[in-house]
Image 1 (cartoon, rainbow, N blue to C red):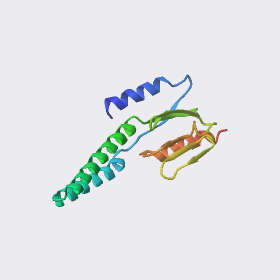
Image 2: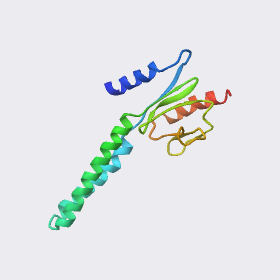
Image 3: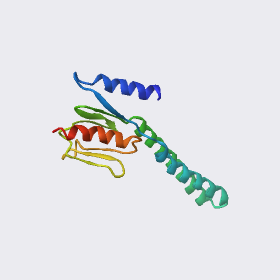
Image 4: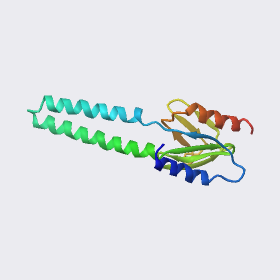
Amino acid sequence: MSKQKQAQLDQFQQELKPGEVLEAIGEFRILPVLFPFFLIAAISFVVGRVFSSSLMLLLATNLICVWMMADAARALVTIQNSCVLVTNRRAFGLAAGKRFNLTHHQIQQIHARRGLFLDSGEARSSVFLKHLCNQKTVQAAIEQHRKKK
């Protein structure tokens, strides 16, 4: 774990209220996010070099490469800054640049298809946790405490 990620986790752990017990920490994976960007950029680079006699095609492929690398950098920053902690009372953290704090009673539904969507019934407080490595662990920790209502 990087020093930046560890510092972020320490900061969130300091926000734990008295009596809260840490149940799970959400771990995000980056490789499935970055692979399509690098693949498209590599294909675009090869096509540009094969058809280098056409300046317009070369310009277009170079622009696609730059665009894919910029999107990859944005995705990397978003995932690196994401952090989710589940305690015996709430789920909180930062996901996709959005800070959230949901008690288990606020979470009305959990949808787990392409990620973990914690639906609180309000658009501004619901959160979508995409690219979790330990999605089942985080979901089980939340479900365990939601059933105690």
